Image (cartoon, rainbow, N blue to C red; front, side):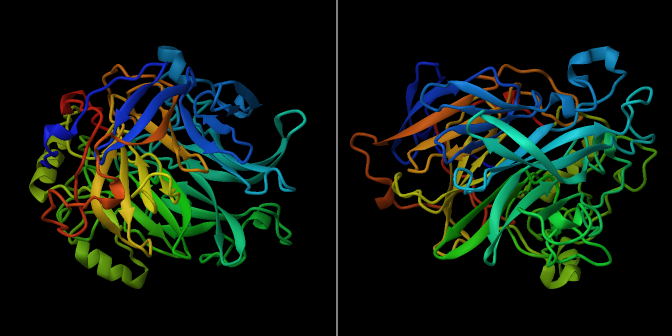
Length: 535
């Protein structure tokens, strides 16, 4: 197990609606307060050009604008009539065992010219369940998966009515599931043109109740386990949906395809930033029992899943991307995931298209993984292991907080905190410590940053339970369904400025000695036994 730093760096706190001051491990002081509460699982939070927080609620199927100063909330779109299945999560036994999809209404992206001629807002939501009219769970037999469908839609924002209007469907064949749906939208340039990118998960294919479903993350003709790229405005193609697929996407033969990169597991974080003149698309995704990844996404890139987990360092050799207790399923580990004989050989076989993550959080040992897999075969459902479950990603490019410029900010679900990862001058590598902030008994879902860089907003899930199909024990969560603001106040009295402090790399992992570290943690500590074990 990876040890934390000395307890001197840890400050326990709980938030109140009236606010509280918290101190980071490098002496940063923040005023913490609740901006909005009683949201139905806020998924996306974006700081808009109108100085409002734009928020999607994954289970509520609402899009709102929230005044960050007063907390006043204005609902600008209600998508519940577009959801062609009921709230199974509220029906209990009456649902027949039918699942709720992971997420629901998820990604949102605002056009940078939202208030200046291009009032476009892009949304992604799950709209259909293939098993809605079937008896029982509605999922395929032999653990073959629960098939939902999602669509990406462009709306226009009307300033006069404060509503989203004129929906245009870009794509309505996004495969979705009750597990591993990804769910982030981001606008980013490629060359001199702006595009819309969307992250899709592998549908949980190969684990839990989907253990018998084939995993298609390596299949270029499938949208499962991919980063997809769409036009922001229709081109001249004749087909209604081809109009939204760029003609220079890498896998457009034999028919046009939105696939941009592949080999992803559950990519819930996606963010673009320009570092030292070079634009980069950063992505975070969940690993199975370890090896949560941070990647730089490139055209036609292969990111390994399910043949390489995290770094191609061999800690998954002899295993698969997961295991199940369903003995009737194939292979040593009762799963449709392929056996990983050698991660290094798999990576070599992928050739130049393969990309290691720029950091893995964190490579667990082969011995620990083997024990966890054996327990999974036995059906043990209360396993624990060190990991973070990164739920989103943002790039801090401001100068307001000394030492933070060009850092990746990664909110976590299992880790109950915000992680800061410092980038090098070119934005290609992680340098210095893995530093953690705002730790409490929460599941952070998304992050937004004010334009001046002084305010950080974090969305908190409505429950402490994971959204995957595994069994969970309900837990108490601080400020469920809330948006928190952390306002930078300056350095603590007598504290040396962050920019002048030396970063030290702590607790190097033997599997990746130069690239993985769990380092400075602050503001609260929750016993491992109280953390949600799965996601």
